Image (cartoon, rainbow, N blue to C red; front, side, top):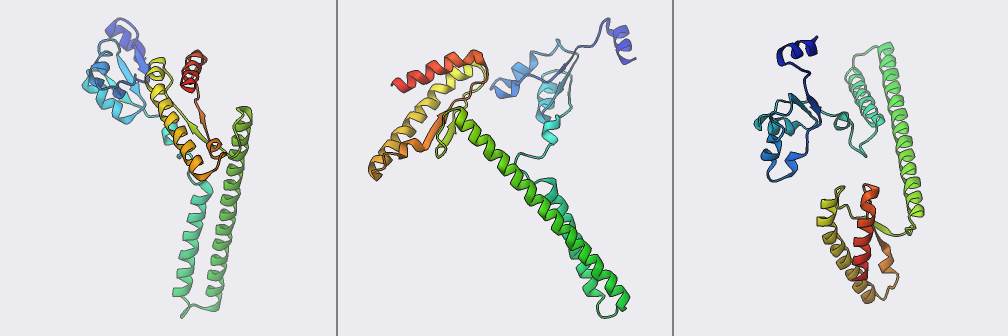
Length: 232
């Protein structure tokens, strides 16, 4: 019904874009955002600060959020830890009630309170065990993935891995990767100097560089830049 009403008034369907361009990533953010004015009927954005930026640029805009931003951060304690905290709080409250009633409570009441404390403590222990089990499983999974990654890419198991992340666009790679490779060269030189000072020839192998490539189209360019840096 809404689309029919819009068509009757405006003579055509509404043009709504989901996800705004990353205008905020540039120094001339306002100018870039204003490019959409007049081209769209409405813009739906994922980041809270984008709504103000595009609205000020004359673009009708609504912030809708993104499910990934509502998820707990990577490495956050699992849900079991929250349950354990709640159980511990309940257990503490039960202990406090039992202690306060000790002087005047009847034997039957004291027995009930003791049972309540026992149940709360048991649940807290179970939640703690679940948390420890989930944490151990997550750590094991990470270890398996790390070992598999090193084997597939021929990286020593005892090496520290440093990732160079120049971006996913050709202009980003061309502008940033040379600086990153120069920094890697300086780091390598420092490692060589430290190894010589410590008479430890194996120290230079403790760090390995990885340059992930966002698309296959960028791979020849990245390989050429890395090979060129290695030849210097």
